[in-house]
Amino acid sequence: MELDEALADFLEQEGIFQKMFDVIWLVEQDGHCVCKCNSDGSCSITDETCYSVWGKKHRCANCVSQQAYNENRQHVKFEYANDRYYFVIARPVWLQGKKYALEFVMDVTTQFTQNKAGEENFVMNLIHELERVSSRDPFTGLFNKKHLLKALTASLQESQQTTAAEDAPLYLAIWDIDSFKQINDTYGHDAGDRILLCVANTLQHGIRKEDGITARFGGDEFAILFHNRDLASCERLLTAIKAEIDSDIHSSMVCNEKVCFRISVSYGLADIHGAATPEAAIHAADQHLYTHKRKVHKNDSRS
Image 1 (cartoon, one colour):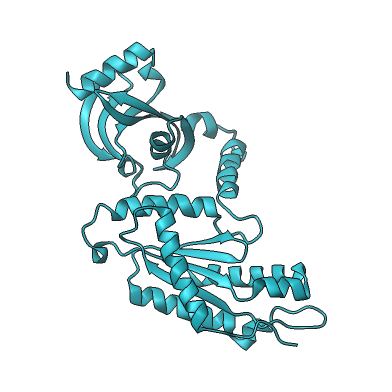
Image 2 (cartoon, helix red, strand yellow):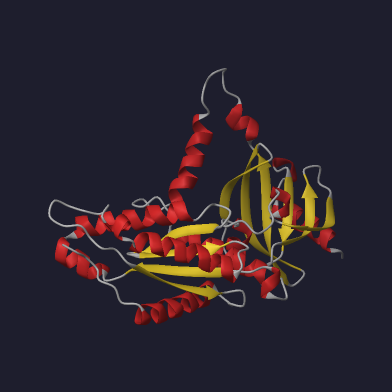
């Protein structure tokens, strides 16, 4: 039995009404869509990727098919593409002795956008806000660790499909603030918070959206996942940002009633094209960070 026939039989046996959905995809672990079923009940073999159907060049950071496959449970999300809104459900499934993710896609645009003239779309505004909030660090406004790990997972999977690092360069930088605990202990957490915001703002303005993803990794640690940047351009960006943060002019911006603080940061940059897991990629960048910190010693504050 062909795979499309097996999928059609499975949907019928499970009592899944295809007319409820605009399309149903059968997705392999790497995001390759091998079978497609339409709302009219027809199924066919296909050769696409789950992200290309959304008009993207790489796997979504919130890919529900990947999550369903890896975690063996159902996941849902809203997706926006080509001025349309979609509700997506993904669940793991076994067919012909092989594991897949089954992705159900429903166009819900009209359910959310049929408003009276001049009225704002409250539901969609709420969805967008929830998506934004769930991916952001509430204190700095940067992306959070969860979003970074999802993006890192997707980038590593994409890089594994290329044969050489120069075909799809992938670099990860980990930053931390030098002697941050000492600053907190000596001058209080208000001073530490000022410095965190100062560093976060500099990173946010120094890294454009097309350069990569900037995230607060935790505590006084930050991370940058670069997009299609070679080693030289990554180093130029990082060096410029570090110089700005370390400069006396910048440091004078972080003051309280009695003292201004000299801020310095350290970073480690790693080529993670060959990393097997997000944890391995982070470990590689961490090792470069520790090497950098051993070489560079700066004062942490000034009176």
